[in-house]
Image (cartoon, rainbow, N blue to C red; front, top):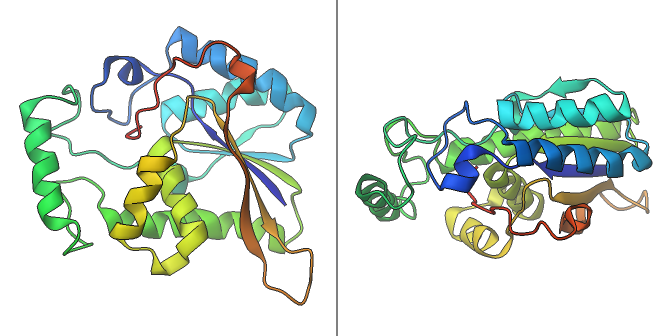
Length: 228
């Protein structure tokens, strides 16, 4: 089974570098990116579209769906991580945000269940990522889908990548390099497969292509903020 993970189009918070809430929406450029992406995806004969319920991802999925003629299916496990309510709307360099980041660093390595205020912490995001992957794996097991499109967000997609590699053995120290190395542009395509060519061997995830943005041509200046 081929799975095409898509990061949503550009949003207001992507361009202004402020901490996102759940209600951030696509800019005009973000909608244009999704339209351009949809034209490319139309050639792939996609069987189904799964999307995060958050507006920036759902609207990206809707634009794609209108072009390829498939209704998107909402999967809550694909939504972006929940940022602390007290920080939403603040610039990423605000002193309150910097203090929160310092507080996180004190706790993360020693307590994977720790959360800053009402944010989603490491264990919550790890478990949600495993749930999302399990759902997709189930589609392959049922042999229902051959090509699946998944519209989601930058941070949770990197969590899912880490879970593809480490499964339930993922810990915070293994996650950090994933976030530092694997950056994502808006509407970047990450092509993965799940399955096996040899029935005597277990099925597994493979990453075929990461953050393919050739459809954007010269528009690669778009933001790659990992917290969106």
